[in-house]
Amino acid sequence: MADGDNKSANMIAQETAQLEEQLQGWGEVILAGDRVVRWEKPWFPGALMGATTMLFLMIYYLDPSVLTGLSCAVMLLCLADYLVPTLAPRVFGSNKWTTEQQQRFHEICGNLVKTQRRTVGWWKRLCALKEEKPKMYFASVISSLLAVAWIGQQVHNLFLTYLIVSFLLLLPGMNQHGVITKYASMAKREINKLLKQKEKKNE
Image 1 (cartoon, rainbow, N blue to C red):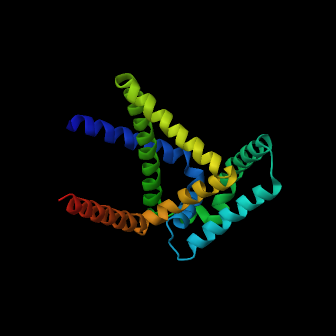
Image 2 (cartoon, rainbow, N blue to C red; image 1 turned 90 degrees about the vertical axis):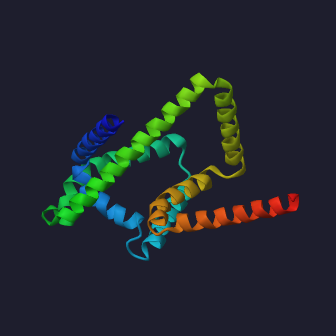
Image 3 (tube, rainbow, N blue to C red; image 1 turned 60 degrees about the vertical axis):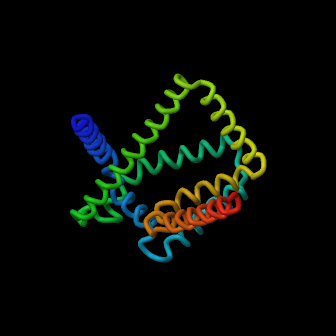
């Protein structure tokens, strides 16, 4: 078991080092974005939501077709991929890169690698469920897709995308400031109260 854990840790370390090397030109931008999504300043959540809202209002106003939207998104990604590594050192100053910043950048890359491995793990578990329990796999996948299809039918596509993007952008900050833990514990207490009341009624 220890050998397996060591092997996994070594693989994560190698993948993290590779990702750090690939994202080195984006280091300053990633650290700046990390500070924003973790709400290092009280006004960051408001600025984040304001920028997201403005972007989606612009998309709503322009109402581009799917092909135009995809083309513009890929074009912006290509421009960013070309310009950011060139301009970031001039804007942020690469000579100011400290040990603390390097450590934080290493942590971010490590978290990205772990998230990728978790996603692959979930996919493998789903494939294993398909092989071992095909009926359960079929029932769970079909019911989940039906629920998603129903939600998509009830809520406008752009508004639903806005809600998902906003939630994902606010998630690191909520996690950092204990908002999720707070409300999860409150929900857990309420559920326990309801269960106790039900037990008392049954008695």
